Length: 240
Image (cartoon, rainbow, N blue to C red; front, top):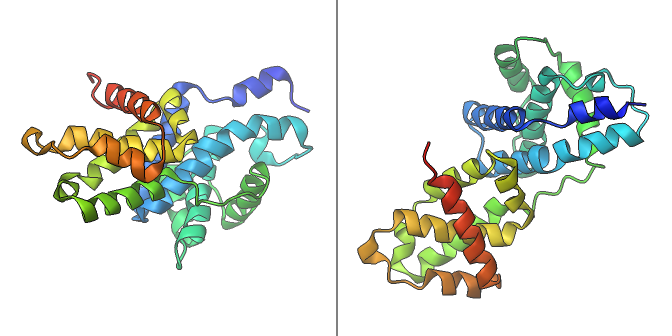
């Protein structure tokens, strides 16, 4: 069993968490995966795997060497595994372990991982998630859906930059407090669309009642959307 001190050490600091999120986003770009693969992987790794890891270690009898201790290199491996699992769920042709291993060899300098390590790590990753890997409740899917809808009902929809929407999604993962917004994917998707409307649509075009429309199509509470939009803008537009 792990002592409380060792379990606390497994909890990532803000800087460690940011490093892992950045590594995942950079790896997704390097592997040229579809956006849904990246955001599903972020959900699997950041929203579920990392928070579940301490309790899994506390309650299980796993003697797996990847958890003794949980090193930065092991976390990098689990990041790549999250992308691997996500690609299996969301793409007809998933990432190959050969490509992932090649990226690991280039990116993870402290430790060499074999193909067998990837297979072993995948099973461990799934065990931590209790084999619950559904990805239908991902904010990106809801955002893509309402963005498509608004383009169909209003010309202003064409002015909402979807790339900006995705950049906002990436930025929200930077800090743990803003990443918690992903626990409400419907409200978050609606709020990101409204925030992107505010940031990217020219003032002279801002006549469409986007808040009322988003509230109608998503059934989200207006006060929840306004609060989230405020949090998003505060984070995204903060001085660097």
